[in-house]
Length: 124
Image (cartoon, rainbow, N blue to C red; front, side, top):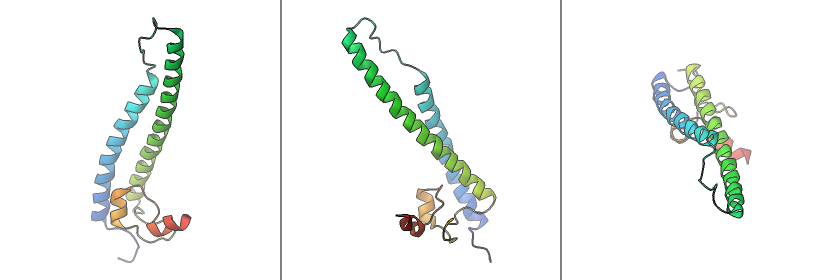
């Protein structure tokens, strides 16, 4: 094989791995988005005003954290979808800096990786 790429068998293995992770990631993303879209009634209408204020502040902080998690999860889903595109065009697993193959062990842990460990470490 003259080109520097993984075999079709290897690509099929990574495709199955990525598709499974993608399904899981989409479920997690939907849960996060659903929890953000529901305000959540804590039943504090009849409690003291100061408790309501504390509750509101706590809820705002929690919603901000959920929004950050949701954004991070959305990025993860996009990265996995991009990895599937690279599998389709057979460029998957090739480091975008060195042009060398990314180690299979790294791709199994981080299936959307576009950098080899060597290139990642050189980044700083």
